[in-house]
Length: 182
Image: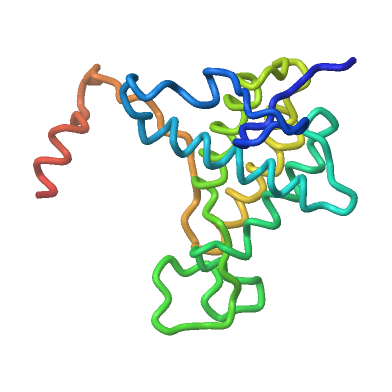
């Protein structure tokens, strides 16, 4: 399959200065939203990351392994302390002192990044079926990062259950319990 995926860079690969209107909107349009600006920056950063590989990787040849490598590469710029198993603060949500554990990208940041890159891939001509950002391996990686960071902080991530408005005879409603607690 030869799906042509466009890079969001300002220069064409063939040296021409023409570009599609989706890459550079005319100046009479409203400025991009914060989300759209971030999505463009993320797409350009990922494209640059692929170009810097040895040998360079074309966007059309990108697969989930390149995406996973990119996510691991981003860890070096992270600001979230993730305690290692041997750390005395492992499992403590608010450690009392500093430690030498590494800084990593937060799970939520990676999850949002993948969402933006997944959308950008399709906006640049990639098909949803071949989207390397939407594959199972990426979801598994994100789930593992989430669980690892939750254990390191001692805070389990659990799916929120929907509140039930029904009152069972002989029990208090959640609202009554909250009012008594305050």
